[in-house]
Every structure is written in C-alpha cells, then in structure tokens.
Picture 1 (cartoon, one colour):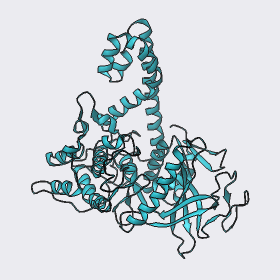
Picture 2: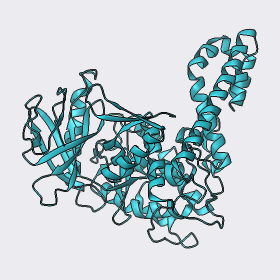
Picture 3: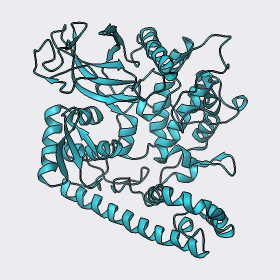
Picture 4: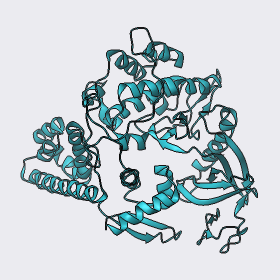
Length: 487
C-alpha cells in the first residue's frame, strides 16, 4: 500500500504502484524515490512515516519525517520549529557517519513542505525493552554506559549537544545488539561563545538537566540525561518519583528491588546526577575513567537483553485475566479514595492522601482543613493519577511489572526459559497499546514491537478472536485501529 503525504487528503491509502493519489492527486513518491507505506506518529509540528526506497533492488525500509505545523500551534513557535527541523538534517548529515547514529539519506522540499529521510533502525528501544524484560541489572547498565558514552563523545567532539537523551531515543539494533542514539531533532550546535548562553528550552520532562530547563544546556546536560536514563532503567520508576524534593536528593537506590548496585556504580551515577554543574562530570572521558577504574567491575562484553522470566504469563487468556484483575483493583482503590475524599467536606481532611501513601501532604491537608478547601477541589481532578502512582509503587515493591507480570529476582539463581515467540509478542503489543492510550494500528504495532507485518497481524487476530481486542476504523484516515478492551 502507498500512503499519501498530503496532510489535507481525506483518503490517503492508495494501491501499490500508484504514482498519484486517487483522492487528491498529490504525488505519492517523495523525490520520485521514497514511497510512504504507513504513518508511524504525528505531533504538533509534523508527521513520521515508514517508507521504502524504491531505487534499490532490495527496497529497504527508511523513515520519512514531514514538517507540518498543526494549525493550533502558535505562529510564534512555527518559525523556531522549522529552524529545528532544518537543523536536525544538518546534524544528521554531520553525525550520521558514526555506525551508532542513523544516517541521513536525503532532504526534500516538495509541494511546499519540508521532508527529511533517514535510515530505519530495526530494533527495540530501551523503554520497550524495560517494559518487556523488567529492570536492568548493574551489568546491563555498565554495558549501556560503555557502549553509548563513546557515541556521546563523538557527538560532543563535533560541538553538538543532543538535549533529548531518554530510553525512547536509544534503540538496541537487532542485527548486532549495538545501541543506536536517535532523534536529533532537539540537538544544538554550540560555539565557544554560545555555550551556556540562554536559548530555547527543549527536552523531555524528567530527563532534562536543571540548566537545560532554563535554556542554558552544556555538554554535561547530556550526561545528566543519560544518568536519569540509567536510574529509570534500574528501578522502572518515573524519574520524578526518584527525587526527594524535601531533602533535595536522589533516592533511586531505595527503589532497587532485589537488584543491588555496587558502591562504585552508585558513585558514578550520583555524580552524573549532581544538580550543580561544578559537582557533575563535565566530559565523557571523566565518566568512563571512573566507571572502569581499577577495583570497579570490569568492562563487560556487549550482550543481548535479558529474556523474560519463566513466571511470565504463558498465554493470552492468562494475560487477559490478569489485566482484568488489575483494572478491578484500581477501580476499587479509586472508589475508596473518593469516599475518603468526601470526608473532607465534613472536616476530616487528607484521608484520601494517607490512603495513597502521601503521608506528608496528608498531615498538611488534615491540619489546614484541606488547605482551606482549595486542596480539596484540586484533588478531585488529580485523584486518579494519585491512585495510579500508588499502584505503581506497590507493584514495584512486590516485584510485579505494570502489566501484572511477576518479575523474578535479577540476582538470584532461578530457572529461566524463553517465552514462545507468539506469547512474547502479545505482551509487547499490550505494552505498546498502553503507551499509546489503549489502541494502535498495525504499523504502530510493527514499529513498537519491531516484528514483521504478518507476524503482528496474526497475533492481533488471535487477540481479537479471544475477545480482548476490538477492531475499528479511524474516522479521519480510515486506518484500521485495534482497541484493547481492558486498557
């Protein structure tokens, strides 16, 4: 199938081999070479498509990025976004020579719109790997740092700050297990005079360094983001939950569940996470020197990710039952929380916060009549999120993943077996659907799970037959959408 790149096209699907869109008449080939076959994602400033290069006999897959600001976006933001889009092309052209950075294939302006075509990385990002296999061990974190820090050194040597390092932007390439750093859309080229000067605030919440949050990123900002990535991978806890704002300190070691970290690794990560720049590592070289210092764990060889443990659910039926039970538990807790919240109208405030583990604010609410009823009204809207965070903490303490899959202790001697391919794919599909709000298309499923179209379609069909997934069409694009009923 060919997909029309015209944002205004109401029926973008076309037959293979078509040169022009049957609905709007737009050209289907970008630069008479690249053909989009499915949309991958869309945001406020553009869209991304899975495509094929029709000039090469093997027709390899690639990625097309289209700059197309949403009409709702402020006119003041659009020029800056356009500049960042062109900047990404320049960065990829400069940096794509490295084998662990996607190569820039082409840039185009066609029918008044800007396009960027880059190498498609066949693999799984670390956020998906974390969801499927559970928290990373110290060995895996050391492998990650030793594998990715040289890539970051290559980037910094060319006077570029990535500014958006996070698990979603690190992909483990399927062919060789190497880690690939992607998404240079936020990257910034710096000079001796511009480094540390105020600029545009860019980055992902929870991962951006303090100085980056005020528009003054440095090379050390990337090291901070990489450190946050590591502690998130080790704990499987949201970065915001790993910092104690009352004490002004990171408490990530408290969340390690049967997954201890050595003192040497803790010292390295803690220094990467220092808020003041004067106390943080200033270069990749310094991090590598401490990481591999004599007396610390030796540099390990790159190994593939851990396979899920034996006690992972063995069938789609069990998975559905577990998801249903977790949803029921959440509904009960939410109902009890709202009952306790209502007690605040009778002068007994803060009980709903105590119930969900918010002890400090619970005392504050109790002593101030729910912040003089202001907190009472605010909590009516944030209570569902409070319940979600409490359940995530409890699952982590019990060693259970967000999907209800028990996680075997990482450092215990336990029998492990590989999941059957089909069952493993179904669990990955559930995680992908959760990340996308409970539904996804076949193309999104393919990109999120890094499996073939036929394999994904077969798994989705089986889940539809079992009654856990329903099928519908997107009212705008007409794309088939699979909605997970229990999410």
